[in-house]
Image (spheres, one colour):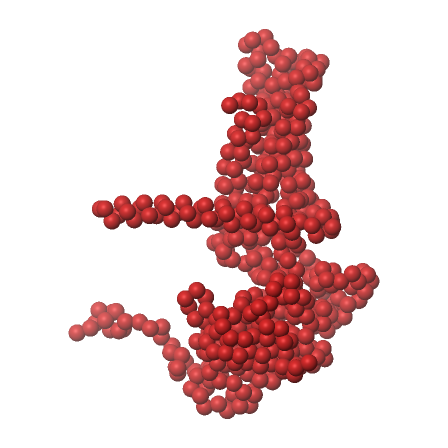
Length: 264
Length: 266
């Protein structure tokens, strides 16, 4: 009985130490990516290609989701606001919800499942099929050639996708609130314009999406690079990317919100 | 310039506590095709990786072109690797690039050659492996043998002094097998390279290599020219060359008594 308990506690300790040491390895990997980023910027076409893969190819899911989230916000917001006779403020509610929170967070979650998982699977398969080893044998540093361009391509894409998500969301809110329900269009736009502050709201939203972009991308790249070179290893790494980066996004969102909007 | 491109002396290597290679002595003269043979898990691929600098020896000396690989730093290793090529077991072609881009990869990474010259060089290398007409295809559109030949063209793109082959004959049909074997010999001779072939395909490799090393359980158990190997009476070599089921390498994995396992023991 005692032995089993000690074994259990030891197991928890070992898993904790493993996790912490893995985080250390990931942090070192992040540093290595930053240090090896120079060549990527000298050959910017490599980054542009990754912006296409991570950003442009994620456009459909981001735009459609943004539109629907905005439409739902329009419906739900109208229901609540009309109780207080404040339905003209619908534009404010929709835009602030999107720019401050839903834009960066939902876009990052979608980005993690669309682009993050693809990055992990691609790098993991490159490792499993010895493409990474082949590159090293050709005296080409895979961190500089494969990892760094993907990192910067995704980090640049993320705030742009979040901005597009928010823009589509506002459009969705407008369609439901103004076109469908009949809220006054002038009030919708003018109140939005008056209430949304560039620094407080938009800039903070952009900062959030950049931080989420860095977190999601580095998790995706590390999981792929660290994956055991087998089919099972790559599939587990892909799942871990989505789970870990989703948790990281939500955790970081709380911390950033606490700092930015003095909620705490 | 020494006549020996590779000189290995008393080399040992261990993964943690497990000793994988013990007291290896091996030399490869410039222009030779050397085969390293042995059954799966004997340590021959590890030896190839040590020569390529992917790992460092635990003890002993391993020199490639006079450079001691045990003490080499990252920058010098990458400089040395520009003069080396490696053919991986299944080609390891970059799946997101066409055949042309795969062969052009090193030329683009390591040289500032104009595009027209890169194009000519790539076509020359692809022509040497008979696949100039396939330059627009993607790796997923190639057969196993073709992928291996494209990978060979890619590994000779910078005219290396040494090429390492990891199981170049694995999984090939008889025609591709012969083609690959002939290519290795022909390219080694025409480009003045040295080739180290890790393989367990006895018949194909004995046709075209200059010298053979037999590795078993991390030790070189036999060496010689193909004729000497064919005539060898050493039990392990004899079993290997003739593909016999029983010999020093038993058919059965060590197990408890068969009758006892079936519950028939008295």
